[in-house]
Image 1 (cartoon, rainbow, N blue to C red):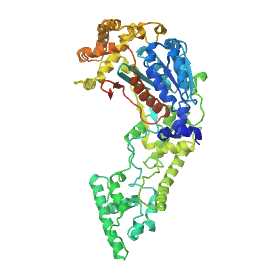
Image 2: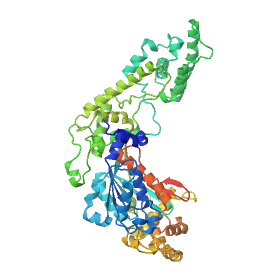
Image 3: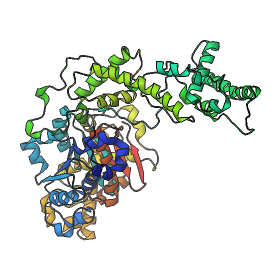
Length: 586
């Protein structure tokens, strides 16, 4: 039963249409940790607070400076000198009273050193800094627990997004195009019985009733006729075209039969259901197959059925003080990879046994011209088969504590859309190993494709930051409390800024060259214009870029914690100069 109250349903009405009651319940039970309350982090949290994230915790030791006032809309002039984490948390909490906001004024390095288990108490970690060593330390802590890290950076007119988690299971992937699960090559028994009833005898019905027969029944009858003549199911395009011709010609001949029986038919009368059937042939007629993504899951060595296995080893549970509270005992509300493999193995066993090689049928139908009574009978036939599959699958999952029948129904309906996404590890990406030859095509040959170049620039800036403790082109580190009183950190005069840029240019160039050389890329592939632009950014955030990146990153967090929709699997670069977004396929 849904825990969404009428008031919350009214508040979250639009998003409930996207991820449903279950997604909203999971979101409301999730806690997110934001590391760094700059502009992009604040915008990201805003887009999680408004849809009703359960709680958030901001970790940031910086104080609010005038530089923040120009880019971060969640601090005001009255907050100058105040801990930035506190100022942002207080304003964000006002946006949604259902959300609990917390903040910790402490450096991330100290937190990593003194309480590394702190990070195990969250459903997702958001990292908004450039320091790779910190990121790797966090990754080593949370990766064994499969807690996702979303890296989101906004600097100047460039945005960067990266999702890091060893692997991620998705039950509701919501593909863009969903073909109806009709299974006309092996239809449900209830459907076959319905087709053979006298009310669907298209050869004997009068025109007034013939036009009410659902097109699905019409297509199946002509599939049977095709099979009788050809001896096989019409799987190829040519076969489907032949079935379409049979349906089209039959519509005219059946109207003639009706007239020959003395029926009065208006000249403009048409069998619209036969026309619908002809149009639906290509999508309705297809061989029932297990999607390759699901086959890959079934072939995984972890997808092995055992009704005595334990969902989660107690030794791998996070410490009690960091463990997330559970409002429901359903294992789908806090889906772990161990739980997912139990569910997937049950679906596999059903498919190999009760399903006779087929996944559980979805049990829904597209709309079609028909009388209400006929359509409801047709829909009931498919739903009856779907419920039988749910009951059989439920019996295989009865040993899973807390699993509800509606959870099994959700699993059965989405069996064809199960996904396991594997991500390239941060260690593999950041260890500066030579690039593979098939990566080199990513290096652009024209100015319109510069995403990979900005990626190398960000890596070079990270190397610069690791050595100097600040962004190239800036006076001091962005997260140092000292920036609250430093005049240069809040802008300074243009002459001083130009001097800093000129001094940092050769140094940043050297760091970029190191990254390029270690990646097997010629140093001349990144021209000095990119280096100069990165220095001119000075580590500053432009609010419009930060807001855009915060919106994208918030969507990825929601995908990850709800296990719905497919997250971005590759590093993403947004170029605000050209207004172009690119995924780096490596």
